[in-house]
Each structure stands twice: as C-alpha cells, then as structure tokens.
Length: 310
Image 1 (cartoon, rainbow, N blue to C red):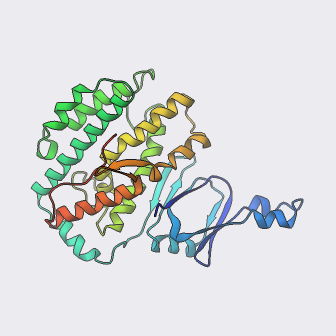
Image 2 (cartoon, rainbow, N blue to C red):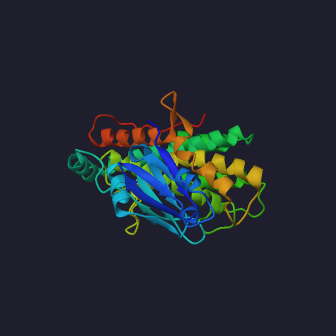
Image 3 (cartoon, rainbow, N blue to C red):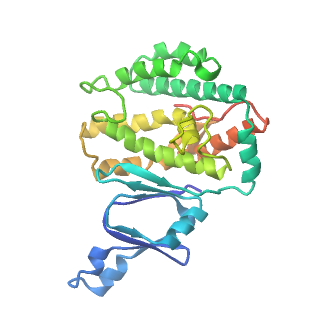
C-alpha cells in the first residue's frame, strides 16, 4: 500500500480520534458568520495507518501527543519547517522492526570491506542515474560512463565528486551562476526541499527494516543522526533533480517556494521509479533498498537493490 504524504501550511489543530488523524481549522471554527453545517464539513479525518509522511509548515499548527504517538507506532515520520518554510526537523520511531536487536548487531558487526563495497555500489548507481537524467533532457553524458563502470571499493578515486562537478555544470547550465551547495542561490533551495522529503522517506524505510539510521556505510558525521539515510538516498537524488529541473523550466528560479511547487515535492514518496525491472512507488523502493542492505549485512546477498533511471 502506498502511504500518504500530508502537508499542513495553514493554522490547524491536529489530534487523534478513533485511530484517525483529525484535522480542524481554527480560522473556520472561530468565524461566527459561517453556518454550523459548513464548519462540520471543514473537519477532515485520515486513517493513521495510511500516513507515511507529515509535513508541518506553519507556526500555528497544533499537534497532540496522542497523535504523535500513533504516528510513531505506525512508522510514520514527522517533518517540521522553519520560518523560511524549509524542512528543519525530523521525528521518527526509535523502533520499527520486531527483530531490531538482531539487525542492529549485524549492522554493528559489518566489516569495513563489506561497507566499502556497498558504498562503491551506491556511488556507481548514483552516477549511472545522473547520466540517465542528463541523457533524458538531451545532454551528452558519455563522460560519466567510465566513472560508474570502473568504480573501486570505497570510491577511493572520489568518482562521486568528479561526477558531481560535471553533472551540476550540465544540468543547470542555463541558470546563470549556479553552483550546487546547500546555502547557495536558487535553485539550491528547491533541491534542499526535495532532498529533505527524500531523506525522511529513506530514514523511515531504514527504521522499518530494523537498522540504525545513525550508523552509515560511508557518512560518519558525529552530529548527524541520519548518516545511513544520507548514504542510501544517494542513487535516488537524480529523481528529485529531475523534478527540480522541470520546476525551474516552469516557474524559473525564486527565493521562495510557492505552494504549487511544494505540492510537486510532496509527490516524491509516491512517484514511480524503475526497480528490478518493474515500476515501483519510490517509498516502496526505499524499503526494498533498506531490506537489501540487511541481507548484505547477514551475508544473504552481495548486491544492494537500487532504482535505475529509465
């Protein structure tokens, strides 16, 4: 089942009733000029079991502890946004799998060669997907082929960085002065927003698979609680990059991200990707990727399962 992504960008009261997320709008409830029938119709309910991601993007959103507890029990993730309407916080379950202890141990005991090989597979697929996106938008990406085909264990030649320089120069060559870095000028803000949704989706899948999101196969920042999510999401980034490319063509580059664009980003967990020869919703694909890492840790297989850019 495809889980829903919910976005709240207006004043709202969010609570739990009969295992349903109950949405009430204070601006409607406090308006005495509106008929009671209209007020009743303005109340919405969504089954908690159908929810995968919740985005809170207004300072006057109130959410109850009971609802947060139900969301965590359902392995949903909660994203909070800051004053500039960019994702700034992520709340997710501490436990999402019945045999979590066993999988934690396998993850902690994973050898360095295994992790380096997993990282090489990850970077190779990321570069291959970057090439696929460039070719899709009419840009020759032959330069990237030897980088993903001749990947060494642990990416000791730093092919990821080499590919990134080429990829960003080509993809947004039409955007004057574009350089990809987090605090850079637009459309960096579009990329950051999309990646935040992707990161939350991947983090959810990692927890559901019974793994520690903090312990990465490559990333190891002591201040980063989601190193593994940052590792496994790498081959998925080009799917977000395509969305941003299309949004730049449609809306141009702006400091603010209008609601119409956010709507497109909220579709990321449900967008189709090609995985193992079949179309799959991205959220389902991230779950299969996380499970494939579990199998690698357990010695059941040697290859991670990642989507391919079609």
